[in-house]
Length: 119
Image (tube, rainbow, N blue to C red; front, side, top):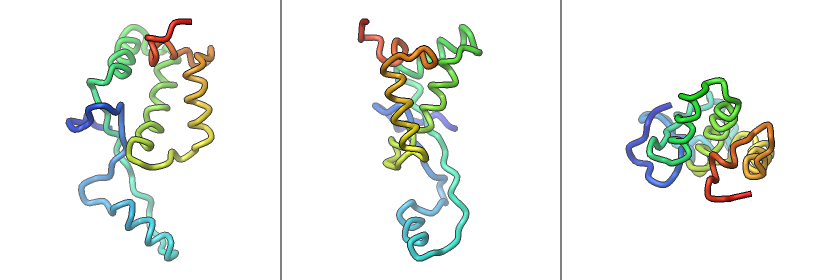
C-alpha cells in the first residue's frame, strides 16, 4: 500500500509497479495460454478522501472496532474498481457494498461512509 499523490476524487485504486507488465498485455498472453505469475498490485490510497479521514479517526479511537476491518476489506475491492478492473469476487463485493449502504449491524458503517443520510 502507498499514499497516492495523484488521486483526487477516488478513495483508492490498484496499480502495478513501474516495471510490471500492463494489464492489456497480460490479458493477451493469457488468451494465448501463456503461463505467467499474477502481477502483484499496489493499493494506492487518497489520504484526503473523507471516508479515509473518518476511518483513521475511528481507528485511533478504537483499533479493534469491527468497522475498521470491514472498510479496509472494501478498500481493496474499491481499488480494483478504481483501477478499472473487476474485483476478484464481484458477487461478494456487491454484497459488501449493499451491506455497507444498508448499515447492517455486522458492518455498521453507513454513518461512516454516508454521514449525510439520516435514518
